[in-house]
Amino acid sequence: MIEKSTNQQHSLLEDALALLTATPLVALGVTFYSQAELLTGSTAGLAFLIKYLTEWGFGPVFFVLNLPFYLLAYLQMGWKFTLRTFCAVGLVSVFTETTPLWISIESINPIYAATLGGMCLGLGMLLLFRHRASLGGINILALYLQDRFNIRAGKFQMGVDLVIVMLAIMVLPLDKVLLSITGAAVLNMILTLNHKQGRYQGIS
Image (cartoon, rainbow, N blue to C red):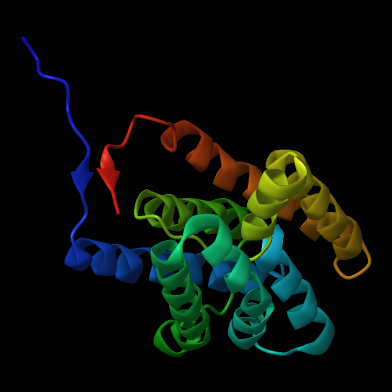
């Protein structure tokens, strides 16, 4: 007879190692997207748009965009989630700026960049979710609006991503926008297939 598994608490070391594993993966995906001039949704998508319009670094822009959302994170998810999310955002911001110093990409196929970049982002986010952290921003706002005003988080997130795509059309060529949508589909497929309630028993 197989005994039903019980939830196991992640240790502080396990949470730290998860952050140090997930954030370079996300940064690598961002590097692929930046090299191919693609973008994704949510707060990262806004950071990409600002980067392409101003040529400011993705890392600092991403970090600053997330600052207004930490109070909501604290109110919605508690201080532990907020602290882990702050660390995750900070590490992604740092790794995004330093990854090009460690690897040199002279050229990359945009289809490959969209696909593998989406995979890196999806796997990184999945690891963060399983250790009760996130990349902050719009995701936190969506959860807050759902709890406070009964606005469906999924629909709000979809609406924000739609606006980002519409703005991207004015900044990027249409083929790059379509490839960005493909990358987002890969990212969401990874999360949909693997981030299901009750499938992963570890808690933080």
